[in-house]
Image (tube, rainbow, N blue to C red; front, side, top):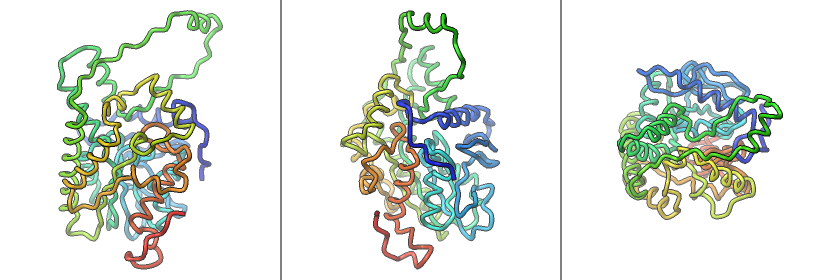
Length: 364
């Protein structure tokens, strides 16, 4: 098992882990236009690996699992969502939330996740692979923020045409990377080149003016979209033995009132170079808006059980440590904390030993 990465640059992810994810996400641009885009299929690296469908492997009891390679598991469970569920930020496939859930429950959890997918696309991804999954036990949607970002992106795309603006949001669509910072090719520059860069006046890249509606409106539309989709999930799974749970994924400003030192440095770096994904969430970082957003999702999704990881994560014993590599992705410790909170909240850890009605474990 790969050792957890404990040191990060202020940009968030450590190198070469950072470069592994960048190469992985950039290769995704080669997707076929007639299929639902997930990621590069058969990708191999020390950090992230994917199956024949571009889905990331999870690990359970020394074996790897995916929709393409589910082996002889009597039943599987699904972790559905975007890049947080995929595990962007984890040092290896063994350190994703899905792999930690597998370790804690003793059952295989598949990562049915894709960077940038909104609620409707998550459902479509399940429908695409449903016939390959066999018996499904638990379906946990760790999601929410991509749907909110898509509401803003729709407004940007519908706005007046401007070459600079068009270039900015086309770059976002092409990269499909939920705000991962670019990494340049490492090359040694001459002394004169370095001196020239040091003496040259700094030129700020112009930031396109994205005119977005009030965050309350975007949050309400996103909550309604998530709620409708969750009811579709519920109707689709009604005739199976699967259980369905929605968990609003953590967002750093919604989770914490005070930040550990590493996350403070990371946010300071992000403010110097805002990412498109962060800008699509503009105005939505307020905690009161967050609570109204979750309440509306829960109301619209009824009777699907809904939980808010932004309020639950503080129950983790490691909550005071550096858990985030940027505003929405987590490191190995953060993924492990998420998995433990999910396991405890849903009472999943008891399933390997006893009936599903056993008392949920306590966080220790």
